[in-house]
Image (cartoon, rainbow, N blue to C red; front, side):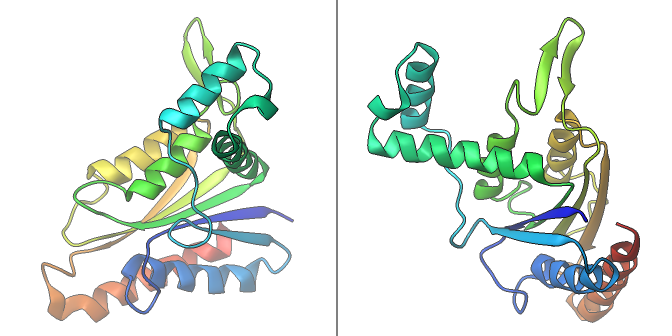
Length: 207
């Protein structure tokens, strides 16, 4: 049995979001081929928001590093530190990670960036060595699903960032599915979605 962590990084549903529509198609097919696996969905624009790195959490970390007990932090700081730590432990417990988002202004949604900040932690997911940083999460695999209005073929900053961070923490196997070009050619929307759906369903069998 594998633990599958799904990161839903879009505020819209599968009826209105292309990336979430393809995510749903993938998961439906995946559950058919891997009925024994446990799937956990983290809805970053729903009830499962992760804390952003802000002044409160930076101050909390500094105090903890200098010996201040967790109980002496403010209630907000304790909650943010706990949520941050829970996010990284959830990632570490996953065997497979699936991320679905849209390309917004050539970047990932802000809440997806906040989630990546929780899993990119020295001593947890990578370590510093004399030869540079080394990832510590070997053995995981990931799938990134992203909808793009134009055609980028994986060369946009968002998809490169997702793959870079996953590789950085040790996730070397990263598949990517792109739903591209509907804004340029809306008359081909059904064809583009059908092609992405087929790709997702085929990948679900072996992922």
